[in-house]
Image (cartoon, rainbow, N blue to C red; front, side, top):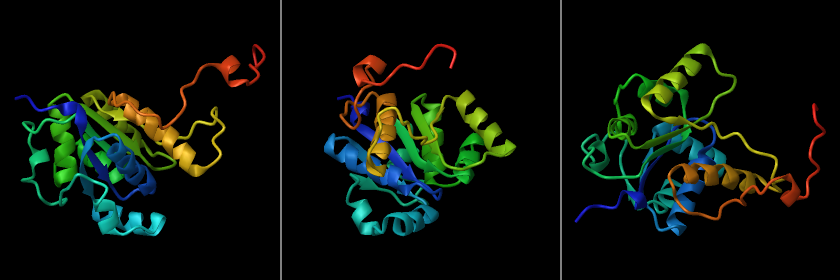
Length: 203
């Protein structure tokens, strides 16, 4: 019997600020009955504790399976393990560089390399500001390989009333990229539907 790739996703949390994106992604996928394979770098765990005040055990319980970052013999290190793809949320510039240069030096970058070689969806939620030239060149490189660079930049047109709502809006768009149905954020119906005033022409 063929495995279903549409209900299995690899989620990685690395050492950039924004651990909330990865943890909230796990929470959402759990409610959507999507099998998740979690990877967290050592710096990622530091940010989970510092930014969210959540324990390692608490976050691991949100995932279907948690893999050690150094376990390069794990199931997700092989292309024969079928998934819908992988999201790195947040993605540090170190991880971006490793993916861009095909290093595969830990299970996060190896799993990302597998997703790329199998022509599956890889979404990198890069977190840094401002970007230097190395960052930009690495983003171009992974885009040329087929990955999607998705900086978690909030949209303001829905007039979010909390940080949680803004996070959900961003993650809803990421789930759209994997074709996963959700109700994390309202769909844009145009300015007339939202009741907002359209900008004057030329402004």
